[in-house]
Length: 472
Ligand code: FES
Image (cartoon, rainbow, N blue to C red; front, top):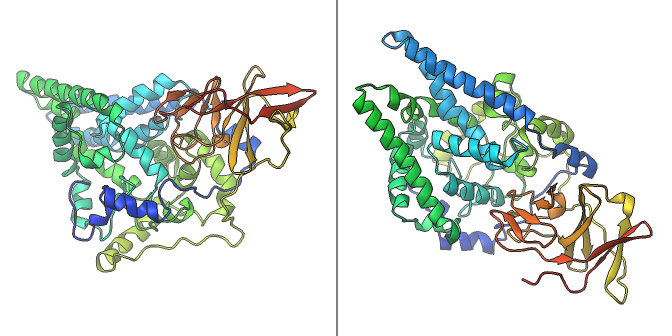
């Protein structure tokens, strides 16, 4: 948050505000999930490179095509039109590319996600490492006051700030100030709240790379006595950020704070194919928050499966804004006011998931979990015993694994995650663990999972609850 409007100090990320949320049971809490059959969810989670490669080629095609048209028409007023398209793609639509690749779900191939993530981060004036952690917190504590660093419209809303935001007027000074501070190793108190210390050197490196690129662009403009370099890198945010806000502010603005149900604090709206392409289906925002591992190309199908468990989707982008504008106006006078989303009568409310439990343990600690055919290749089962939760997995070659069932990064059930090779990917923030020894394989996971012995015998799967194989 660049500036604190009177009354907004409770949104600041500091120890005191964070502690209040923790004491209220709102931090790192368990969130409601609509019931989706396990087999269906496995299908939805399948990653593919094809759709994202196709969409990225088209997207860069529009970007380079509009840049070429701008140069071809340079010197005439007609150059304004392709340039505005370029700016909207560069500074507006890049936000959704940034978002999907941050989650690591856009492409199947990890390096493709990483490359597009770094490019899109640069385009939307974000430092990749900082925002990766910031967004991790946003998914843990969505619109939880004092915990979520990405609340776009704290109350009472700063209308002038939102309007200036359309042109990135405040984003520029904030971004460059941060780049200079981070490039010399300075991390703010707010950032320390959600970024682990081990990531600080990466923050510094990224800031230096961004600064170097801007330095080269500026020098090019001076040397060639031309506006074109800065017009294509740097200035597009002035003319294109509006698109990011037109889409992005629909996500949570004006809805409930401090609730543990994404159906009440997020918006899903239906829209045309152009918006779906530019926004990469993030108009299905309730679905995305509830199941962040589902790739953007599968989210429309997820919507069909869970829509009866959710408030009705907004009929268009326009219908969202018809609600948001008067809500913001009213919140200026009545900061406590928010839009109440109403759940259908048949909607679920319990935070419950498929589980197996209740079998007794033999004297060696082995327990019969399920029939072998119930645990298919690349599948994972949750198993509860007394106060503890475990996860039992079968890999692509039929091999079995057993670990603690809750991610060491947050209170998330790994049985809702995705097996990737010989790793389990957490459904909340896409952290990964190696299944054979529980060691962390991808950030934000830093602490190992406990692993247990597991075996298949006479067509049944058993695991041993006794001593874990890896001590932490
Ligand atoms: S809860 Fe964050 S990676 Fe699992």
